[in-house]
Image (tube, rainbow, N blue to C red; front, top):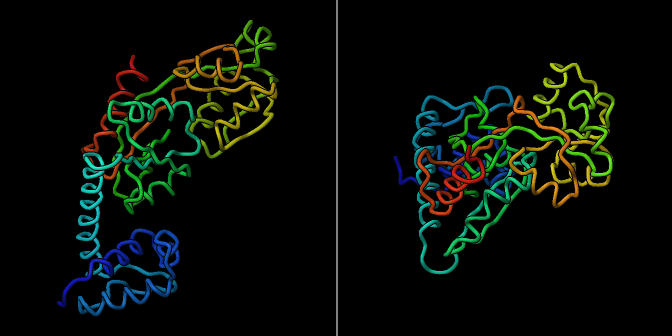
Length: 300
């Protein structure tokens, strides 16, 4: 076997993880032709093809599966090393690259991240918002130190990532202050035919809300559906409808959006996770925010 080029190996690893050259080229920001050329050079270096073509699909060969397992260990260890270095650097400001799932309440994310920015040695935070699947891809490619999410890593995704549960909260329902009394009196029956602002159908919280409505035989009128939780609250502030949000941030919601709580339930629980590329958290700022979230924000 010739000398192994780790750049070629990373292209191979990305293709194996993403499932195609086209998707790998998007995640690596290079052309498909570049990746194809690098894969050919790697095949020559190991002496046999690492992928078999089945129709239009690339499938790992037996040797490719073996190489992939080693590559995954190599680059996962590299991500852990990068995280440790970033978390303990002494020259210049520390940095923390975070992914925040779009459906996660922004006030929750702010409460989790703020301790790192307000510490005695504050960290420079870079936040990127997207879907969980996209953020996990960036985590796997070492572009992020941590992902904050309202759901764990899906089973069978094939990405090496670890869930660190931060805590959970019951739900509070909010209305514009001038209309709160009518909904508060007979909550939750008062939600029948009330205009409701909800997360979109693909949200785990939406499914829990729908189940709760069904269990209590409630039939609210859906006034709007939103991917972005901050936009949903802005429509609530404008008086378009009632919405639900985690009880742990109800004081902030009432203050910032001039809303009133009309009722609460512990039957709906929203859970929050920090997702990392390593099993044990080592980045000093990551340890700080996760420990603080558990002991303060989500303390029983």
